[in-house]
Length: 163
Length: 380
Image (cartoon, rainbow over all chains, first blue to last red; front, side, top):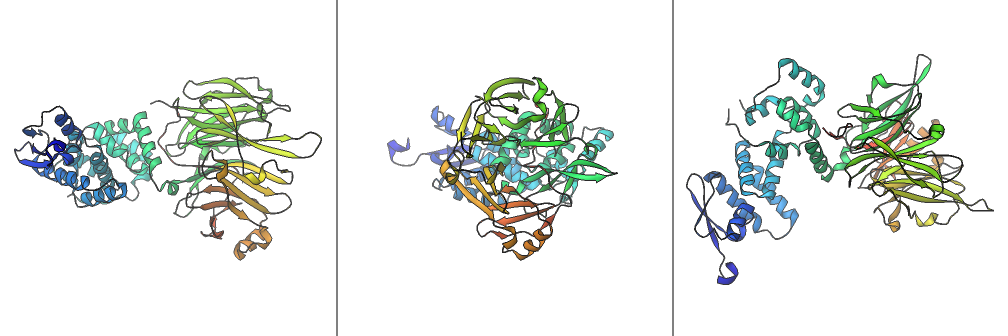
């Protein structure tokens, strides 16, 4: 362990497309999934992360390093998270929410889902269906009824930007 | 078109509970499964929790009020709501089909639900969510001896320990102690609780602040005209009455020449003190609940006729009407109704901060609430 050797322990993480990343243990254990592996002593060699691709894992590691470098200051952590997520597009955010869920990182999960909510806030029903791959299972009558009931919520909806 | 994402319902819920209510309601149109997810009690509670913890929640304050209306030679009562946030104050009428000639009382609100009492042949309680427009009128009237029903006062709140919305009813009679009853929307039944024996009550409904009901109780000292008051609270779960200290300057003080009214102003337990014979209003608020030292005078309107705001002076001169404090924000702003108008003041310098917003109707009774998805029918 770090305390015994005097040098920081490094872990090697492997993405599902076989990219290898090394990361300081102190940063990696922000993920409860990884922390459990370390505590169970199965983090000796390479830690395979079967549900995360290389591109997403690289982002997550950037986040892990960035946030763990900030001392316990919620304001600063929040502004780091905001900045970190500011330039991410919807697809990247979606990959990150899946990764955050798999890695069990509640702070990243909260921040990413809040960011997705912010992106979705003024989007149309059609945009959300396309992005989330949701099939409209309403009958035309049902859909008309539910739309009529919530008519006022369609004011101020942005025109779709994904075509 | 970009790729679609495939995330679980749990993660979708995680995202949706961070959206504003307007977006959440729009996304009920996405699919049947999103509609049912958004309608679950678990989702509604989580959304409420997150919107309560947001920092600028004062901007979401809404006023729900009753007003009187003359139509076809009859006098009707109706309901309206308006925002008390930064947007211009515009009234939305509610319940067009619920204009009533019967006396109505707004008991109070909690988590976006409003309890209304309509005095038809018997007292009728309506639990209403103005956002979703759901109304629960199945609440049985209090089933106790109803000879005092006309003089019963109510209170509406939420018992976090039992996860139950509750109504308290005190039967005012000509002698103390008063009989008291509690209704739980969870069990759907009334039960008798300990008598109210802390003094006389006036006809104002109990105020729900910080998980407890509050009343102003009066006691007259023997052989003198001294009238004393006490703030009494009731715990919803343990059903115990307790006294809460009021502002120091009123303790053990004769309040004969004052009119005192207990209010809940934007979550603060408040006392509105009007001097008789003078148009002089003082608003006190308990800034930190439970700390009697924290009572602060948050607003005053000295003699209307000498008030420094010239425009208001002219205006009040024409309409010598009651000043009704509505809502105190955490930043110290206070919204006050004068008849058909609402004015926002900066409490620090007592200056008018907003234009005079005219509602067009005169606010009779009111409650300040924040919209939510909470169903008046309880479990979904």
